[in-house]
Image 1: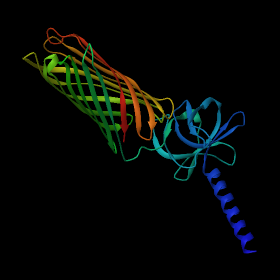
Image 2 (image 1 turned 60 degrees about the vertical axis):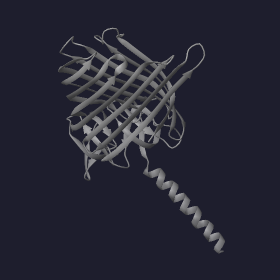
Image 3 (image 1 turned 60 degrees about the horizontal axis):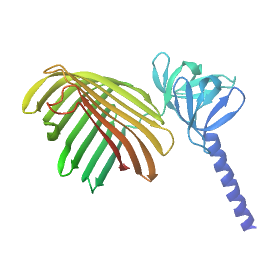
Image 4 (image 1 turned 120 degrees about the horizontal axis):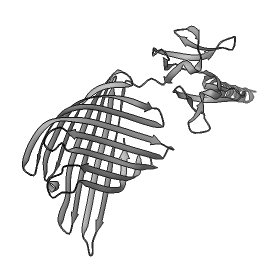
Length: 335
């Protein structure tokens, strides 16, 4: 008797648990009558991004959606630019409504410019790439590239930094000896818009670049920021001081930067980073540094990296090439 009663209690408990999980899920009701349950992370004005329990996250066109129901509040921006924490529900009359502090208000899904999970107050991430190749025989060469990148955000304040060491040697002759450090600070005064500051240090004695310091002030915007795609840019101006081939010079500069990441699956990520500096002194040198590539997740936080780095200057030191490129293949670890 007790054994049967215990089995009944377990069965009822499991049933209630599954029912509660089902009820707690967000819901997208399609115009054709289909219902998709899962976790909604973003509504961006044209699509709803939902992750059901049985599949990866995917986008559903808002034009095909009849209604959306949220189990927990999102940060909702309406067409009038007002932002508030709210949920979306369907009232007793079957109307789509937005609920703020328990007050319902009819809303058209097309009027929602964006609804997303609020950014955490504190977040950080980092990664390190190690790329190396060695050859011996008719030509002895060794190439090493170490790249580290970190991101920290506390409230409305963001910090991004990256550090590169490149060392190349052919037949005991050093052909590359670059150290490059970039730092950027961002204050999101009206997200996704931000203002901030940047600092860069570079040296490469092989190219006769003894040093180059650049400080700047920028304004920028996160154009896309969801679970699969990130695209941001900034533009501004600043001051640079350098010594190339023993000649010192300094003056004002224009700055542009762009960062793009696209997660195609849970294990493939495409990335593109660009930093462009226009010097308005000396020979008006234009400096472009671009890195693009693909990361393949392997095991846990370990990944393989295939990338292409391209540097270009219109006015390099005499006797040096305007462009410099490196194909990098190696392993990395993300934190």
